[in-house]
Amino acid sequence: MRFQSELIPATLLRRYKRFLADCLLADGTEITAHVANPGSMLGLKDEGLKIWLEPNDDPRKKLKYAWRLVDHGGGHFTGVDTGVPNRMLKAALMAGEVPGLDGYDLVRPEVKYGENSRIDFLLTGAGRPDAYVEVKSVTLSRKPGLAEFPDSVTARGTKHLHELATMAQTGHRAVMLYLVQRTDCAEVTLASDIDPAYTEACTKARATGVEILCFNCGISPEGVTLGKPLPFIA
Image (cartoon, rainbow, N blue to C red; front, side, top):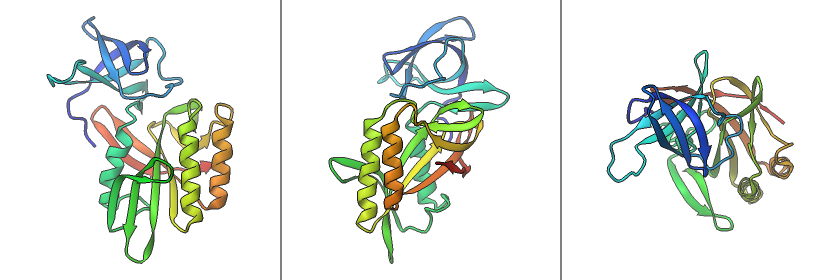
């Protein structure tokens, strides 16, 4: 998935009100950018970080920049837009390019199921059980090479695990897919100290048959692509 506009470098000044960030452009201009990420962004919002912004000239948008990447140096990036995983994965799923989730006839996004929930993707195919696929964007890393989820308490994420467990118990295929939007991690685990309830729900969900899949991403100022499978460390 390529970015619609060429990204420009900037320096982060502050992130606030969840969806706003003040940034300093290379020419010294201070602007406010949209942040498409409601999470805590732990470790990704420190003043002075080098970031990349996507400009736009859409008259319908109040803010003319959107924060897309954190630049860690050495060619490593983190994608901060939580909308990217589903957009990228939809195309990859439809093309049959996601290992372990290929071979399905139909890919349907945002299908209602469970208790007032929507599954990110419902995969269906003749002669095989439906696959309910929930996607989580992973951006936290507190130890070199190790990606962690979540970066804050997530009651919504815990609910999703309960819903997936119910699907597994009723004979469907249920998959929790962690997409690591960082290029500097080789393993994925759960941040149990941040949200022990989520870890407990994940353990119980796996016991019912919920599968865990993890993938990294290829990330650059040009775009984001689906990478390779990563091991999940329970």
